[in-house]
Length: 266
Image 1 (cartoon, helix red, strand yellow):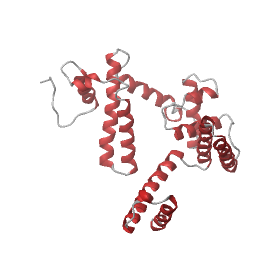
Image 2 (cartoon, one colour):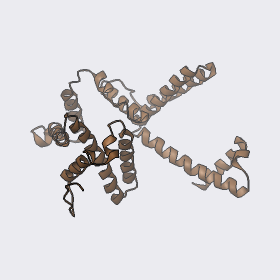
Image 3 (tube, rainbow, N blue to C red):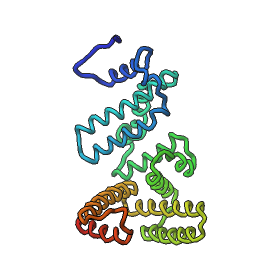
Image 4 (tube, rainbow, N blue to C red):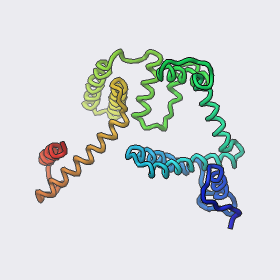
């Protein structure tokens, strides 16, 4: 039995201590074996579960999922502490200092007229504090681990700050048409590498168009995926009602059910 004080209510310092106990000799064998890389996917999954709670407007679930995200943060900090690089409170110190520096209109005497000025100042201060001297460096700093559509849209936004952007949304949309034509030519050529390249260009153009429309490309695709599942479910229901087997039907026959499913879900 470890030396531990049980409480009715715990705080962040207790969480840091509990994780330390789990990682210490005599603690939990599984926790002791973990590394940054071994729990990397867990971190991603916990964040997405918190996002799902937000999307579902479920406050109780959000409270639980934010706790799981916080656990991941503390766990990674503990690993760094064991390697004598930094501790959890160093992370808190750094983010507090960052917030103070990037809000000179609150913690200083800088004047802003609206949120647009706030964002402009934020970007400028961020570039200075990170020692970025070129716009290319701001693009290179966008995390490669982001979902590709999200990363593409963020890259387009940062390129825009350097003046590299379409004048209007119609130009961005026209680029989709051009990239579609180039993908079609690549398909005709049979060159798989070229097809991949042109498909990537098309997807990047879609992300740029979403930005010009004031939409989130990642969110749009998420909603399209959910819509596809609903329509597929209704299609399968209709096929089952007819007594047919989906796998035995041709794509033309399935299309009839698919269009009926779309009508039913309007």
